[in-house]
Image (cartoon, rainbow, N blue to C red; front, side, top):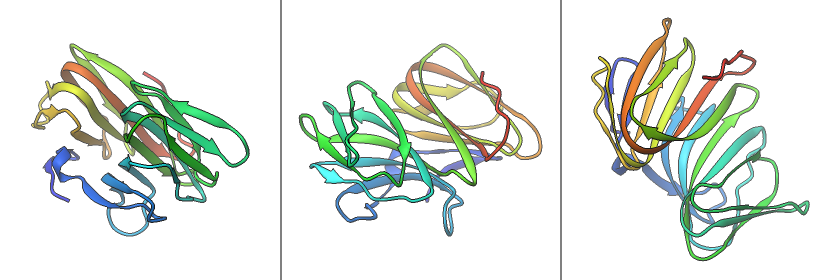
Length: 205
């Protein structure tokens, strides 16, 4: 995967995402990032392209969170009877990958941000936030943050040397043995993802 990298953090432009079939072959996804990049991943970011009503692939042992990126809505119909609708602009739902579910289009195709992680290896949190002025992100040792720009523009106002973000780009921010501090400035809105080892104690910002 091509990217622009500096130190432990880098930016992945949207045109570098890798398009591939769903596990069940019923749809397409654009993979943003997986960790580790080789072998079986412990967590993964992608964008699902849903063009028709389709059963979702089964992912035993994996939790996932889906966020509507574009389109008029996606109805998630679970086999046990629960129905949840992802409504515009950015409705979201967290659920277990073992659950049998069908995605039903409300009115036309949708694109959906898809965060998945192996629950026995890592834990993940996702937030939707406006970007108005500066935002500070502290990356603790052993953790990773992903910043996905939903709309607008952003730049890193720190000494990281990272390039700016355009709409749909993603930054991966990783810390090694020492805590990292990143400052993002701009205007728009974004998704923030934090991934930490399973069982780690997190302090919300």
